[in-house]
Image (cartoon, rainbow, N blue to C red; front, side, top):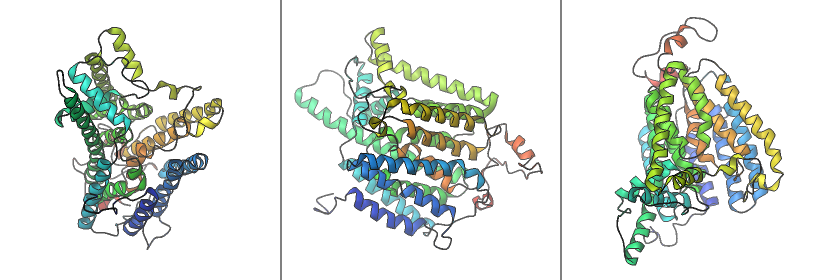
Length: 451
């Protein structure tokens, strides 16, 4: 790319923020309804970027304070989402063909950035651990400060195998150097596939669940244009769990598939675990058993993958407990950086308690949930983890960004419930009056869902 645009392709993070700000406002801002909820959501999403820039420029205290304030406002927005009953249709300032073109070109430029940047250390380590799994090499003691989760290791191994990075047998020094370049290419390909999964999932959510493909294109395009995506473009541990959760939402009518995807998400990082009670409550008793059975099967497979890189039982247990950073779940700890590194760790206790209370309330209320509750409450729980996360809490925007975009663009989804529970929701509205049945096998025209 530099050969095509010599010296002109390098764009700083601050410059990209200004450019993307103008483009986002031009495409998504509602100039004829300045005080609309859509404009408020855009302002909240864009307001998080200055905090990330401050953190990256080592203005840590101001950056984390900015991020915490912005995260709190996002949490308030999510908790009050049920108050906004009317969802008037708001077209984008670009037709569907132009939106598709902008989405494709934005993805191409973002992936160019992913290819030119060095892969994150977790993506690199995931490919290396995946190679060890396929070659059945003992990985005990090979990972010190970097934890490669089971899911990312399996994905890294598969991507590495297809890219030619994984080989078996003894290799020479030259071959080892070639393999190292292959591992880097596989790590970059893993990042690209994770972003593609998010983009494709958002488009399908708009088409299949929202009933309008232009909403899916709008969500995917905004995801690609937001500066936080570009800033953390190479961090596969931020993108992969979000991609799996997006596809779990898309497959919500199939508890087994949703459970498998959520199980894989839990195998990447810790935060999807806090979503499981909410999803069990959404499915109810019968489908909750199917959802839980899929979780157990995936957990067995992920844990069993460690047997491929374990010489004995001791090595097996060391890898299981060493694949995650458990210190972040504790009260005491020596955390390098982050908001809580400046204060007494005991101050996190009331924050953790408040988060657990929030998660419990969102799980049990309302008792009968629809897809609106599932999406909004899942996003709120993930946003809530930012406040007590000891390692740079507040910076993990890509964890919840796809779900937040669903909340921003969604129509009324009160008619979409877990399988077997639609008739219960269709029987009465919240005020007890009869409700019109809208539970067809296929989603009706999306415009009928905006009221």
